[in-house]
Image 1: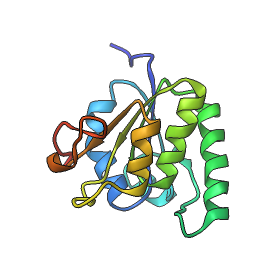
Image 2: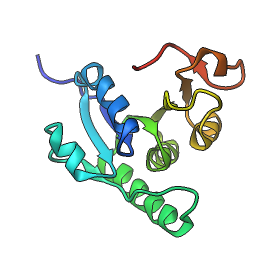
Image 3: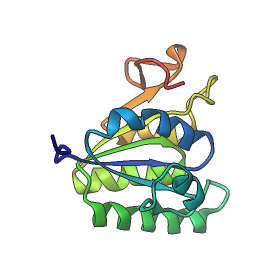
Length: 152
């Protein structure tokens, strides 16, 4: 049986965000799956040679963040995913934004590292993503992120 035709873009920064995304990979491989990350080496280590590479950025570097947003939008326009999933951080959030503009369904899964509060991008994703999840039950809210369990 061939791959489903639904195109999925899975986007995450390096480090823990990427590791959490890789834990979701087996569930996503039934789709036409593409990846975007900030470090080509971590993608290649997982056998992903064609990952889109996004500039790493954060709120402390506004010009780099703006450039990352441009590259994220270009990546989404080029790949035309039906669904975008991100485990964070800012580069993944910019993919979520681009997905909203282009009509993709979007899912944000806030990092398990944020046990006291939602991350800044997680708080923004509550407004912009079609679905926003927290990995901490006590952070779920009726008008905020939902809790469906933890990736780890």
